Image (tube, rainbow, N blue to C red; front, side, top):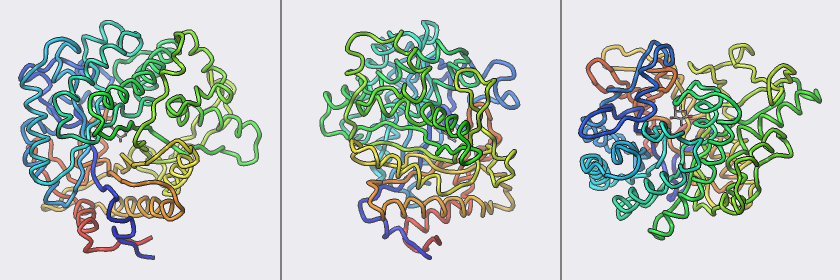
Length: 452
Ligand code: FCB
């Protein structure tokens, strides 16, 4: 069956997403302070091939060409993040005017071309000076973060009407404060639970600040969501393991925001978060977002694993299961996004869902000005078709953003996995639109249908 953009309705928001550290480069230019990713990526063996984002796509220099490219590709919405330490080099206190100028130029140029800017306040690059004081594990983060939000809204809120408070709190607290594989490289349950609780408080507090300063802005926040299924269907132990992993990966941040509290019933270990709770925190965790950003790439298959600490469960990687997967070893499984949307729509409190990230990394070959990434074209079509299916069944999904505009620094995996609709030659900073970029552009122009 064929479908077109029209099937989603006129009001559906189509776009692409990026994040500051992954594209901007200019990590120590024009007064920018260092972030935890600037320091983490300098450490040996933390990032694939010891890559770092010092230059990345040098969006700091090339922003005008890149935004012009968005325009050329008919992409009407652009989600990007603000580097906290670019505008506040010390995290709080003095403002770096050149940093503010940069984002003003980005925002104004988007608007000039009729592209709506969507800003993520925090996409993982905490100012290093704040990390020195404990970062997300220090409750003071609520004040530091409030200061940053206030600064962004006062400077940009007159023109930017769509805001997302955090990007995937589960990933930055889990990978950064529990597993130690992302910045700041901390490990252990205690630092994780503290960081997680403070992030959950900040996501609500950020929302409150934005609405107080500018009631005309729409506020949301984003969550990673991977549909979780048991390895052996019908096996009691695997089923229990799946429930726990689901509580951890998919429910831990959204449920307190919705006023449901932490999912301690299905994941006992979360009871230990109480140690970090102050009186009235439960109330403070709640905030009524205008929209919810859902980010989905894959599903997770989980089995019982008695030796695994805390959850007694393990995720079985796609390559071990012999199923189709991307370069991230994430299973290609389009119904995952449908399941994710259905799950979110079962939360009555959610008003509007926007898919703020979806995409795939493949080995892209650049040959004679062409990148024939047919696997990505198929991936996008298949996932978008599932979004349509969910929408037709009444799910309040009203937007879809591809991760990502152009190949960039993929965190611990460095420059190895390429996710872009646009190929980047990192040696020359040359951009080459991939076939997936052409396809998305034509789909958005309504000149080609997609197949279901
Ligand atoms: C998400 C992140 C984004 C990008 C994609 C592949 O978890 O939000 O920055 O790395 O994964």
